[in-house]
Length: 316
Image 1 (cartoon, rainbow, N blue to C red):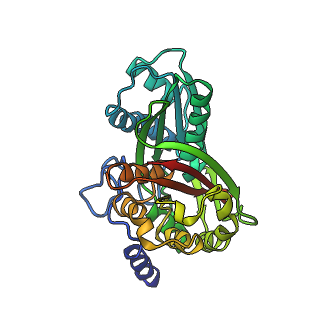
Image 2: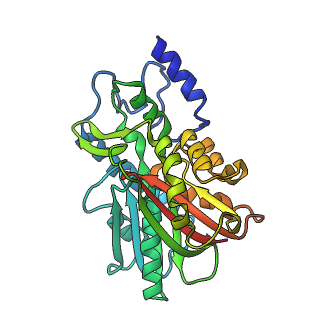
């Protein structure tokens, strides 16, 4: 009973009001989902979870991509760490949208929450070498596919943070949207065991240590000069921080010496959607794009296994 009360209190403090899942909730409070995918004492195997990923990933991707003009797409990059199959999601997208059979395809897999920045980095390399390229990016995660019985409160709380989501974007030399300027990557010392993601018999086994926020707060001051890439704090008007959780944002605010107003968009995405792994930082950037008052130089930052900090300088 004490653990239940502690969990409820921590959930209330998470600053997450909504999370989304490809699974529909069951009308019966004693059951988890309408498809009976999750059943007490009978959680699905990894194979069953991958079948569900294959079934639902394309549906979510299509809902997202239908909002874009894909005419002239030359490259396709997908990021995911929550499901795999072959022929994969990229083949389904090529067939459904009539993309060229010779389109160049890349999957950025199993890199966790910072994968979108790596995909943007790759897309920028492509456009710089092929100025007429039109690179389609898709960041799709079904995190709720990996719910499982948990033995500790820390494990339970990690499930309470993650949700499902998808983002799509176009990277090209066309001067619209935000301008990508540069990237940096840093691995924080002695932190590799704090975030791990292994394939188990009952889905993927996520370990998210409660020491992650402290590691970020303590190490960010040591790498900020590298992340700023020649700029100063006062030069940065926009801070697009991956909302890995409330305590992660608090840690970034402390470690990077930011004012609370710098985290408005990140906290809003966390509040409305939770942590959607690789798709999340793209939601933060979209929040900024939606606000015509948000202009100027920016720094995006995301964290994941390693413990790695991936960053991107941009102008909006």
